[in-house]
Length: 232
Image (cartoon, rainbow, N blue to C red):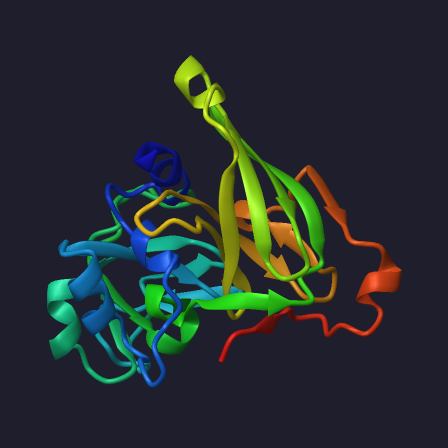
């Protein structure tokens, strides 16, 4: 089931194991968690602000090369994490992006502008979305939720073996305005990540509103904050 999540992040072998693991108390950097769990040189981070400047050097006085929008996923070389200046993350070569004719080289983003795997915490209450259908290319997932963040995911694809799989038990994890829906079973698939707009209480997969999603009745949400309750 690995390939379904890779279709979401768009980078080979990245973060689905970490997304199912809430951060340990006091753990605020990617290096220890990602290196110990993934055992791989690359992972991805998600942009958690509307526009994240991309700098050629770790200095805000330098002229930004580019600006990445909300929910953009960027490759991180974990081997460089221990030596990165405080407050910065080194991003590997991006390649071509929409709006530019040339490749974007390696550069830097501010730590505060992105969400890393160790940031995610388990949703434990006031989850507002009752159901959502996620479609990405030839892959689709129908997700039904409970307000405690637990979920059931039925996957569909162009290969029959995917359609024959039973629904997976999953859970919602959240970091700022980014959510990840991952299997409960450790080492199981991470299904997809999505943006979340608190004012609307809706999911925005890949930064765009999902075509099909339903919220829980307002009577159940009236005493809930706009941001779901997270584990400490």
